[in-house]
Length: 325
Image (cartoon, rainbow, N blue to C red; front, side, top):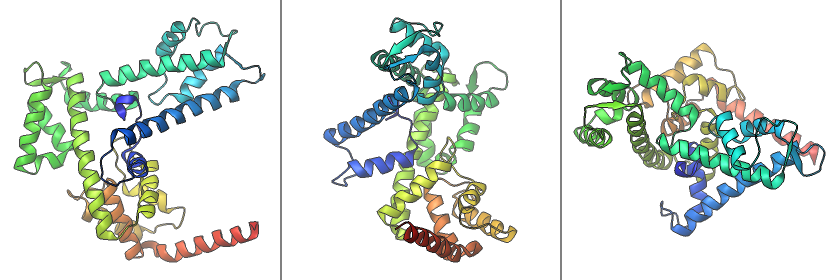
């Protein structure tokens, strides 16, 4: 989906795939894929239409050019770029400098079609990472490019992989696969990666980890007896809080649980212990499969009297529903 400019969290993508993959084979046929893409583009067009209507204060089916930068900021998935917006405007025979002019709905839609194409082109040049992700990865790259040569040497790459993808270093097969990826990514064969090559390496590693997460999620959900609708709820909660690399911290879980109960210091210690226990490297981090395990343990161990608080919350919600009826 990233190739087409949709950078949704893995858990949201999984939920959409479950809805589209009617035969539950785990793979999309061409008709299912087209249906998925049609839904995404339809939602995007709907957002553009609704935003134009909101900005059309005079109701004359025109929007002031001065409002275009705001519209770009609202609709861009990658971080608004005035330079790209100006280029898209020029392609449609206007300029953002003419702030007293206005554009019609059709021109507004054509502008965003051009702007989105420019954004997608830039994403594809950066291994399908969006602007904010590229910025975060640039910080990571610079941390290991200590001499500011613009490249990261092979010995530094081993440290990056160990820090960000430790699972790749734990088995002989994983290390062999990583060596093949490094050889493939290092196209000039100089034993060092420039930033664009580094992005390709990160994309390859991210894809491998995402595939592993999907397989582990299925295993964990079956083992814990989590039904499909409950799993979808957990995915929504996780996606709303996860950082750009798809991880949560115990503090994030505390924030989620604060809608139900407040954790004492003892409860926080119990949470930390559970997180370390389920993490493969005993870190205070969770990807989605570990998040499922943590939430199950919190309920089973009744940490923070979570079960009683949930019952009271549901009872109050039920009472409010009765009053509305």
